[in-house]
Length: 314
Image 1 (cartoon, one colour):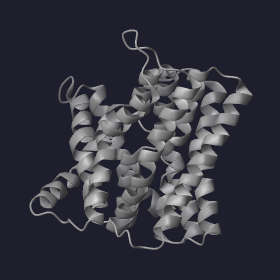
Image 2 (image 1 turned 30 degrees about the vertical axis):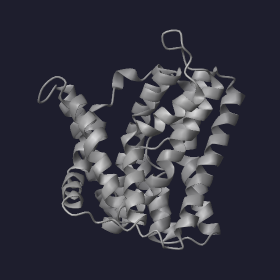
Image 3 (image 1 turned 60 degrees about the horizontal axis):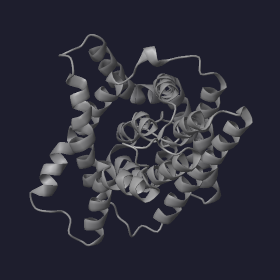
């Protein structure tokens, strides 16, 4: 357990370093939002493209892997819907609970996979991201539009097809996954020069991304969120990884694939959830609080969850 904590600790130290830098405005005002944009639009897409272009799609285990992750997404979402109905919360709060429950911070997943399980773990994490990132985005846009219509833009209500196409086409992570996977399946990778450049960019992605995630933490966003936070965090940190673990056991998926799959259920919700809540009429104040509090909680929950997964799924 102690050695595991030491393996995970560098990831969270980078988060803390980012938060400290932002707190003292180092190196300057506006620097970390700029790094966040660079990571989101350039560095992290480069990492996902680089890894998905190397995935062995002929592996017969991959359909099981995708099924496990998507089934866990579905069960967790049902749990959140039932929790929101039980608490009788308004739709904006319910949709923010949903995001807190089913969204995951891809940056932290890949950092943990690389730190704990090396390059092979990083490739499997990229595979899981290629399954879940498009699925989660489509599912959340559909759910949030059905739960509460987004506000009109200059008097014009945005249609569902337009929202979906915008969520997919304008998301650089989804675009990079589709390009990397497509070129891989067509046998066009590696690409001369381009693969080398993308590989170099991907090497700098995770440290900068983790610093930027830490810089985005806002302690002042924490309010009295009560049971909505408790239940959405149970969905994120308990329900999601538990379903993954049970499905891995049932489908006889063991070892590294199972251990990496569990990582998607033990990390905090994504910081991008705030932007989607603002775009589609969610409860932005609560969403900000959920992101901050889950990120802080994960410092304790991640080592324990990873240790349990290694104990039962190795």
